[in-house]
Length: 119
Image (tube, rainbow, N blue to C red; front, side, top):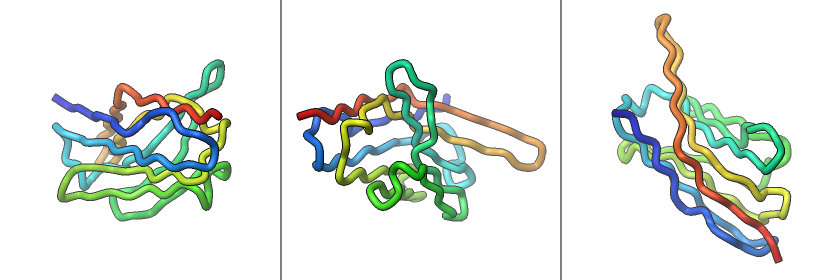
């Protein structure tokens, strides 16, 4: 059974920081690209940051320089360090695991964690 469990969300003021963590089980974690997505009310889910199995990283333009994604293959975790948070970062943040190779594709989502940035 595949599980992606996010933690670390909460309510913070603008300019503050949060660290999200996603713990994966039931997958060969090191072979997966791991990503963080977010969905604000009334908006589509969007990519925030993604790290491939070999460590290539991509960020949404809106978070470059403020957010940092990292993974620990020994612990099967992927983290998202979010600094200088803005009200527009308010959303439900989802962890994603993606595998596509050898003609096989697998894609899994966590249940999401709420991040609210408000004064």
